Length: 341
Image (tube, rainbow, N blue to C red; front, side, top):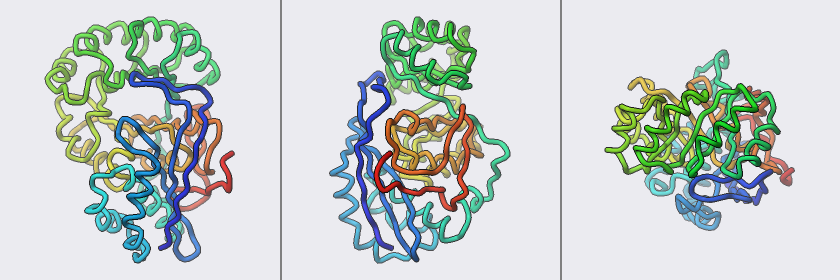
């Protein structure tokens, strides 16, 4: 294989606020793998919370370039296992590499990845659209830009969280999900769950800090609403750890290392009877097209990353009022643009 690395700074349509801070520009890295005249693409974003910069991710790939380019891709799972010893502490980097390998593999095989996995697109969940933390009137305005969207995910973790959801509810009958991004205490989560349920919220995502397992045990037992793990569920062993503390898990491909471990996590969650979800960062259509391959395995999905961007890096899956449309391309269906647009 030949490896190329592209990086982009993609402005967001609106500043995107969560409990930990606000993002204005998505800095992202696209890995391109070439073989037999075909190209596969995978993505990882810069992330302060998890300690990744474009420079550090590029450097990690350069350290293993020789091994990558000496490999002929036949099976992306075997390739993931081959690269894991060098990249086990750098899951964002391995995610971009693994997803690119899957895209290339599907193109080499002449089929979409979901079809190669034996999945069907007959039943795929709709994706939500996320409303970041802001002044309440601004959050209402952002939501109304997506009039008719069936599901909204609302970022919380402020002193007026119930007021936010109540104000949003006045303008839509859509399903709500809320994500506190570790911003609440156990008491707050339990207390907030009742009015949120009355306001049509479906579940609460990651209410507490990821190491507060005792608090999560209380929330799991006492919350009126189901709770879904995000920061508490990053790698495959975490799925078992979340059983009995959460009703479902939100798998992020960047955090676990790509489609290979992400798929394993979803299969294990099914075995344990946990609800399954895949979420995203502020990523382009390259990452969204990887997530889309997993849709038939999911109860919920949050794959609106490219919708939050003012510019995109590629064509691939598209989304209309929550429904994901798949392209005719094989692999993950990605074609990289010469320049973001």
